[in-house]
Amino acid sequence: MLAITIFGLAYFGIALGKIPGLVVDRVGVALLGAIAMVVFGVVTIEGAIGSINLPTILLLYALMILSAQLRLGGFYTWMALEILPYYTHPRLFLWMTMLVSAFLSALLANDIVCFAFTPILALSLVEAGLNPLPFLIGLAVSSNIGSAATIIGNPQNMLIGQTGHLDFANFFFWCGPPSLLSLLAGYLIILWIYRGKFSGPMKEVDERERARQPFNKWQTSKGIFAILILIALFFTSIPREFSAIGIAGVLLCSRKMKTRDIMGLVDWHLITLFCALFIIIHGVSQSGYLDMAVIRLSNMGMDLHNLPILTGISAIASNLFSNVPAAMLLINFLDPLEHAQWYTLAVSSTFAGNLFLLGSIANLIVVEQAAGFHIKISFVQHATVGIPVTFVSLLILLGWILIV
Image 1: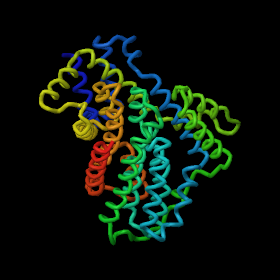
Image 2: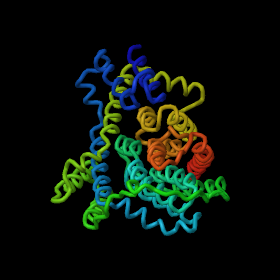
Image 3: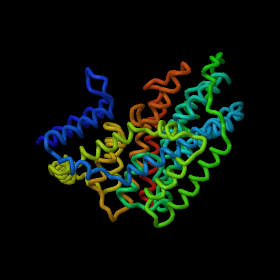
Image 4: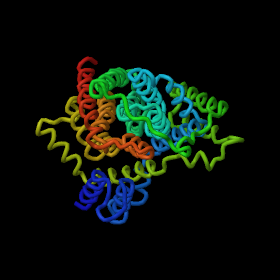
């Protein structure tokens, strides 16, 4: 009973995003839950360490180093500036922004893409006299959708791919088509919602807000080359975490970039969240309560092995707890031999992140970064786009499930 109490309190805190009266965020709540599991003897220290899926952590860590290489090389700034000339054609500019965001998010962590793109995009939109809302919301929506297409697109996909021992190519060919269709649908929905509302007032921008990471051709080329090699290695039998950490190690051997600068861009909070959640899930799994809950759901006609039902439960859980904790919870009940279940969980949990503002870290990053340019994106403004985009995306996924 102690295990389920700690689990319930931890997941309630994660859903709430804080502990009332304290300045503790979701990561802090998860860490406190993991500590409680160990301190109260639910799991041993050895069991806690053993429960952490090290291959997933290594893959996540290595990809963060690759993203840091590109960011310090000015790649994201350069890429954003390349599409800026299209701003005179707002509809085309919106499509280019969403397409680039989705493509890069499929290859790199979507959170990093939003973090690097938002300031440049926000600045340019304000200077050009365009309404920033459709473009910035489009950036967040497309980064989530694009990241669903590959194993390395977002943290929950990395976890699902590593835990389920899924093939990189098969994952892409199953998850790619619904992601592409959903991206197009998202674009059309934003066009319809903001029809006739693409113009906005022009504003003067403080010179300090113009500061951008300078473009370094050599460092950017090195980062792109490293990613191309890594993707090629993903199609071999070499374990993904070995390939990724090996390439990351090579990038750390630099004569120009300090290790401290690269490591400073690693999202240690996200890695801590993963480790804590592994321990919490391990503790409650030992109690048997989760198995009982799944049996009860099955008796009610909600079998998690049924792909449409899995899609619905995944979408609900992802918006209750956020998609990473939801995916970590649900993978315990998937059939290792039925890869379609794993693909469905990956795509549905990622698509569900678009529903509300708190459903995805990428959404929050865009909102927080935009606020620095006096651009406010409210919960309602995001939901006006997020709800129909998520609904249509999940319908596309359900249609894809019926086809394949």
